[in-house]
Image (cartoon, rainbow, N blue to C red; front, side, top):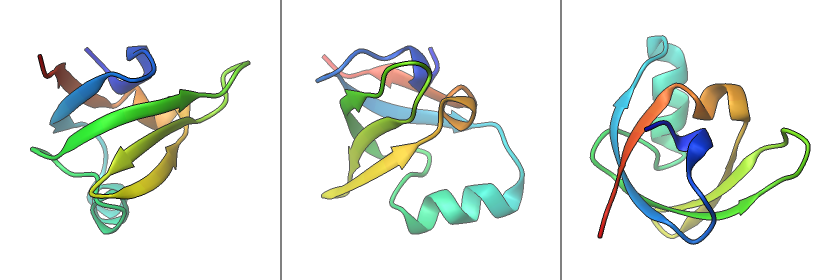
Length: 75
């Protein structure tokens, strides 16, 4: 399941990021990388960004990029 499909207040783990190396590096600087746990805090309406908590930081990720981040729900 991709990050753009996750509902608010859902805890997930990043499984795979399908994008180029420079974008992966930028996400890594924002504490978003494979294996990290995220919590979806808010989904902006009308296709806006998704706000997640990653490593104690709030990070807004655009829907297009979020669709390239594969996650699994943590029970």
